[in-house]
Image 1: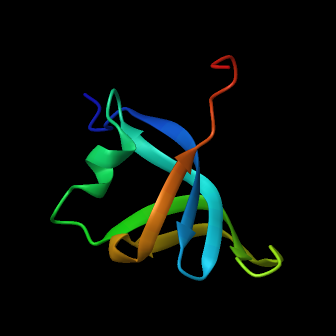
Image 2 (image 1 turned 90 degrees about the vertical axis):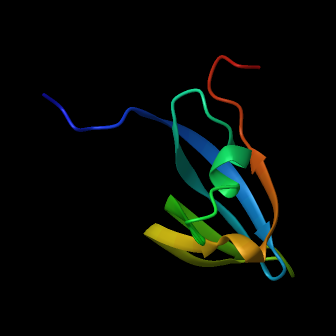
Length: 86
């Protein structure tokens, strides 16, 4: 018996007031990013394979395997289409 919850990987670009973050979010199957953002018990969104850029000049500041982003600091979230979706 597996306790693993099936999730799907979504490539995202997250914009905050000062940064652009490119990475991956894992969502429950058949759920939307807005569903994840509207979960009230969680204040932070986990992002894997993250690259953090400055908004001024778009220079790469940092790369990390894992980062959490405060939901209240997010201004915009864009998804990149999965291969074959276009």
